[in-house]
Image (cartoon, rainbow, N blue to C red; front, top):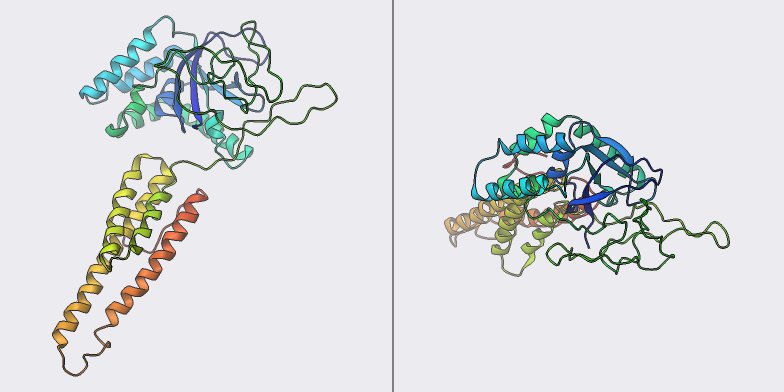
Length: 371
């Protein structure tokens, strides 16, 4: 199951009046609002009533021509690799198709913001997104320098679709979506709302564009206000774990307790470092926790090599003469044991803090910078 950002085109901005509104599916993206959607909405974003979810959920509208112009400005600054060229060609072909064009782009980000801890936090994220979209040059500059390993998030390659999970008519494209909130009506083309607990009618879709994810889970509609009154759908703010917190980089530190003396600690440090650095493009929270885990992983490697090495060298140099007991040459080894205990404490703290959406920084050497 994935929470998604949905992008459509419309000929007018929704006003919540229930007047007929023609929506055309453009794109969807799992777990986040991608840079592609931000580029196409940047300039003069306007909040408006959601066409999918009941209030208080809101959508964002932006001018179609301005959005396409923004994307072209980004394309002009991207390096011309074969992958980038294919992504640009795919985007231009889709956006120039008369079946795609409209007066406005309409972004429905409520499912992504449903990952917040509360409705208030979700609203803050929405307001922050709109505020950032008012500076199109900043969005374009950021996109033009984006990591080439994640360039599909800019070009939209593979994300363009005539059919998305929530179709313009208001029904989910998966018949298992019985727990999703009932979509609002957008006019004569919309179907009547299904009874509480019933599955909305499925819409046929080409196999290549049909999403393969289970429907998102939401709280059940609130109880009806009175006998015979229809149930009202709850606001789409569910409580679900956040993706990409960087916690996995800390969790890999438990590899140190594989029963291979000393070597397991070195393995854990290396894996933490590699995993942590791979989080750089997974969002600011994941990047910060990943960087801190990488710093601690490399610090653990250095301490292990120095302390265990010192113990061996000191023990060999002492030979079998006086003072060849555990002390004093065993002091570095004792310090290493303390470091190992601290390691498990830091790993647990890193996992807990990341799970709460917070950044944890262990007292490590900042090889890769501070967060």
